[in-house]
Amino acid sequence: MNRYRNIHTSPDGSLTIFLYGEIGDYCDIKSGNIVSELKSAENAGTRIDIRINSIGGDVYSGIAIFNALKGSPADIHIYIDGVAASMAAVIALCGKPVTMSKYARLMLHSVSGGCYGNKTELRRCIDEIQSLEDSLADMLAARLKTGKEEVKKTYFDESDHWLTAGEALSLGLVDGIYDADPVPEDSTPEQIYSIFNNRLEKPQNDKQMNLDEIKKRPRFKDCADDAAVLREIDTLEKAAEKVPGLETENHELKTKVEDYEAKAAAAEETERTSLLDAAEQDGRINAQTRPTFENILKRDMAEGKAALAALTPKRSVMEDIHRKTDGEGPWARRMKEIKGSLGK
Image (cartoon, rainbow, N blue to C red; front, side, top):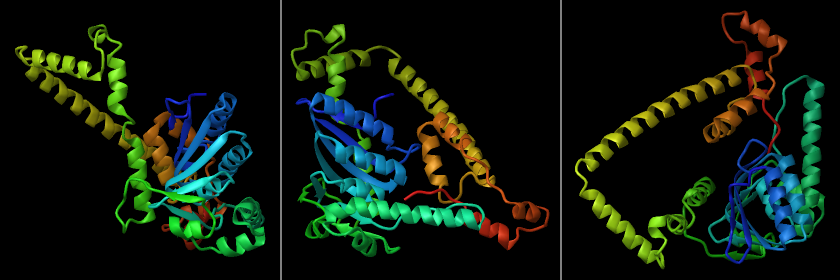
């Protein structure tokens, strides 16, 4: 298994795992990756920091992560950097010490999902949602120091309960509040989520990492420190400026590369749109799940194609009947509204 991309090791050996993004097997936060990293770190006896900025996602994947964190003997500390919503909030409240950024938001709500089928299948879907809510309430009860029925009554009432760091602390949901890089005071939870995700995507200590690689080159083997490396780079840049025609050639090459990249991006966008349109047309995805699969395709086209191919097309007899008419009937429209996949 490839190492989970959002993981950093400090000089002292401690580990930081960033739960940034959506939770699920085809999303940013895969339970298998998280559990694997936890087990490796446990064997090494290192401290593990879990940093969260997530809107939630698949309940079953989240439960696997919750159990791995709760049952781990490692020294685990949880930090809510930006947003811990839905299943991500449940993970954050797994029982380990948890602190929250003064700008962060925590949100708890009912399980949401959907299905497609006959009355029995719809009832089974509702029963599954209710069973999941029962399990999640039981998981949260210990942290909230109350019974699971009280948890369900308070937080699983079909409303979204958004809490600031101060409110979460006063309710005993978190153990403390810490400072973080500020965000605008009027930021919405969605904006806070985007702000912190963008911060993670910026190179971590990029200058230092590049210099370490450069020092391995023969040209820089005698450089005693970073300042010496930078001076040597300045010398090379000045020498390059004196090479006739080099600047023009570099500009032409850069233009060609940019043109190629633009055409490749346009072709990829066309293919991505075609794949999503086809999947939505045959019922494998709907308007709600389309953005999730679009993000997967953007991140990894091969993985996205595999995820879409694994889905089963859904179409009812009534839809076939309405396909034979000039217009789309109300039953077919209603069936499209019902379609969905279970998630939180």
